[in-house]
Image (cartoon, rainbow over all chains, first blue to last red; front, side, top):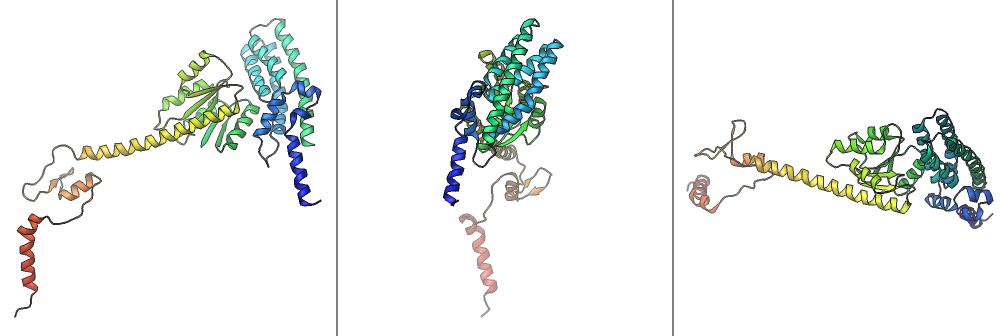
Length: 146
Length: 208
């Protein structure tokens, strides 16, 4: 292939990567805020590894331990640990545009003093949100490394 | 500029790191308040720090309080990142010693602008500290040349700090930035040099 065409192909591949809004499919659109991914793509510099892929890997590696920490803290009725775990997961979810997980974490952070059914209900909600987010992130990751 | 970041959430930390590096800063990354404090207390601490408020072990507010107690010549510029909104959170941060704050989720352009303000303030303070040091040195010399100087009524030597008599020029040179260029004034030329030159000429002229 001539050098010009190779360069064009490279350019198109990079440009397409920078169009997350158009490429995000159904579930992913609901779970991940496309505007946040677009703004992260802006921070990504030519020649560097895809920042969003790196962040997805960090998030998927880190988030389960916070979900687990919240479950353990709720069982032990430890409001401080529950609040801290909810706060941290809220932060990293918000940074990646995972809105629903961030919102449920915010509710957990606000309600961590109440040990009634509310916490259990929120933790179950968090499990569902996180499962959806995990699938959306995995799909987004696949799309980017393809 | 070297910028310290303290953020326990690894996703937010990685984003912050990437942004600051892309803006041309050298980033010193810490994972909690205790680590941040250990870096900020060292003599070569970064001049600018971005601290998350809510962190395990030592929180961002406590790091601010501790850093402010150090009072170095050029205090670091501290920006707090807080999840809390409202006046109470801002006042709490400022009272702890922060220079600026941003609420999470922050706008990237706003962060960049605030970091640039921090860089300007740090550079200004560094220049100011340099000038203050120069002025203090100059003042020290002025003080050394103040007061009563014991001077010999005949040879005009000055008794120095170690009871050592030295010429006016060597005393002044030791106690100030002044330097001397030697010359002869018209009065001394008339009274002294003229006669010395005449006798010198007479001594070198061949006897006829």
